[in-house]
Image (tube, rainbow over all chains, first blue to last red; front, side, top):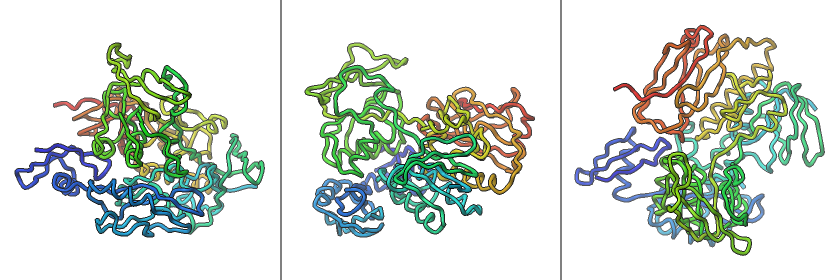
Length: 114
Length: 419
């Protein structure tokens, strides 16, 4: 039995996941919690939010995020790849800053019009 | 210069208030913002988790702000950036310094949406040297996320509020070593999910019932901190000292509503919230001046700031359109284990059928109920499975219940549920 705090929403349900019983989840207040509990035990994923360099804008950093959640183990590699990304203003929300980050098949996208 | 409505502050509160006032039929609106763009603190909160209640999706701070900025751009609300309001008077004159010079703007109604600021080292009085390298978590966040400066490599964080937790992860991702997060209370001040995904994910230890008892400097920069365990009265226990070699100490030790302008206007302040005393429609003690968002009380979710601010926007529009208002009201009081309530007053004849009341408890409850009393007798009870000081609570009082109080003060308290 694995215990964890659900991070899907700010409510923070205390989940119990039974690895020996088809990853059965208890303590969740919604179906998304059950899904999180299962995934968190089998293959934990996170949305990465960070910034990249930008030229010609009001500020020197442009906020970005992975379009979907990526495996937890790939976060540092994506951070490394983003170090060499430099955007030029103008950019818009949803523009791709980095394609197929760390071979996850997931893009890193811009989260602010700059 | 004169405007029907002036909104002071272009963060989440000001944006939502302006949009809703416009939608309620007010077209001559001005937002005054001191930064160079709209969005307020959301611009530096690049992490996700915003908007779950409101938009049913997880947005980052800038994305959440963008939703409102786009709504605003389809209105004719005017925006003045790089402009600092220096004074607000009781008769609704606003003194502004901006690149255009010094101006006095007259307003038919005003919405105060200045937000809050961080408590600093001075507010908590940490002994020791006074070197460089001690930052509030929010200023480090601004340096890192907007301006592109990394403020340290070996970091200790004092306080487990959400900004501190978010910065623990952020600094780690950017290559710093976060040695510890230290919290004086026996529980975290941040959301449970932030403990999980900001500390646990990166194996950052959280020391509850601990605090920083000394800051030691070398050559003008912080070189280490001493951390001690504290007793139930939050006094450091001798002999429990630990030392962390660090070049940076981030403080996440609470937020204070920024109410210099409010006080200057002679508006009544509630010492429990450090914000204005407000009616259910977010009107302050000065008719026609409203307040919303973190300048009234510190929220933990921006979604709630938007809701509250929309209420203020609608009410300001109503004030501008109709001359007469009935201020007959009952007062709300915080009872046992409740630290404050917002609003502090409910207008009985406002026409509203439901009244939202927000408050915080002062300790952790599991299996509890919120008790509403008037004139010594219980008039309502609400069950809660779990309550913590870090999470704002909310009840919705129907008008019939307010009438039941018969003009008596209404008291809200938290109690262990009867088994």
